[in-house]
Picture (cartoon, helix red, strand yellow):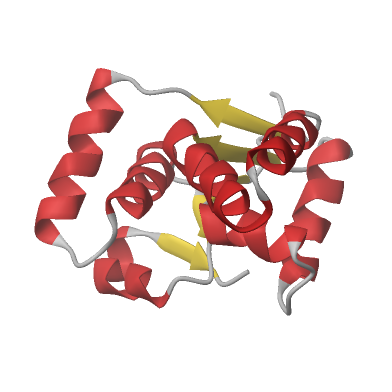
Length: 136
């Protein structure tokens, strides 16, 4: 039987915290090392990747954002594209809880995969026991 790796879903603020070397970034860095060693699986929804890139673009300009997007592509993070099932689950979460639209995609992905969500956003607390969370 194959070993099951723990799964972690990163939302935008987790990756931005790492990029800006803010407190808590070591949690994300350690998860990246674990993923490189094959000890964990890191995932991010495409919506949240877009949020990271546009946030960088707003502050540092679009050419920097495009460069960072290329750098992110080299990280051991599997980017999960839009699909109909996940889309509607995110819409349902957004309707039911006080979370941002982009965060609804991170939450839906974590719930669908029974993965731990890595985020500094306190708004995820509104989901209660529906989600496992690691404050990164």
